[in-house]
Length: 281
Image (tube, rainbow, N blue to C red; front, side, top):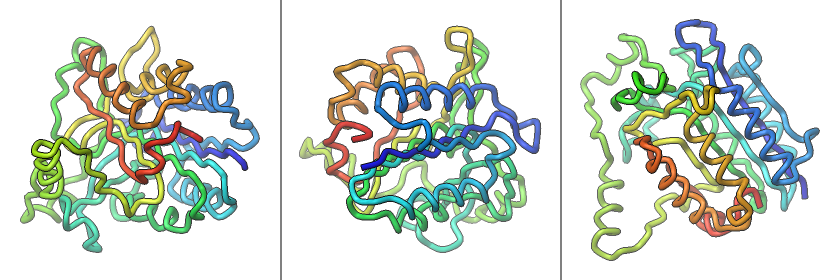
């Protein structure tokens, strides 16, 4: 049973105005966490950063990791960089907001972006008995405020699409929250139950914020860091959370981020059985 990871961090973009400062620090921290705390072999971890973090390289490495996986393996795909959103072209997002989420890679092309659909096509081939964890420290919304920016030298990990791309969805005004989300929250309120609306996913997705929030990077202890990654790695270095169910880790993560004055709320989606197991198990 092998443990393998693909870690992607992008500080430097082809368009310099998109440059960030904390993504490589995030990758370094995740790498140390996996190797020192969760017994990943450094030889089984691939890192793509800056100029090497192209769409072609990312998809190739992810596809290779999935294709070579065997029953009982644990896989991690981690991304730290900008995110964005574009109009969905194939109709698979109609029940949500008619938008595809995008990873803004080093050589990002608005006419052929790295969408969640491209990632899903690879993950669809994941062997049944492989545990896959996808971690995104980016955001897919430009609507949230940047109220922390002045006080904490904070950047938002989001790139607005150019005007012509935005115009493709001009006639369609997606709600801030989809009908499914509203119905799920209503059932939680009435019945007090946790509804798993992601039972079709064969992996875990732990992301930095809600669709209508920004994921932040800021100065923490003298280093630029992604807020999500910083609090997640620190939490998982505590012994009690290394063996705790993922749902408990998630609940504590959200509370800690909010307790320090950050407004982003990480999201946990995916296979229900994995949510009840320790992370990276």
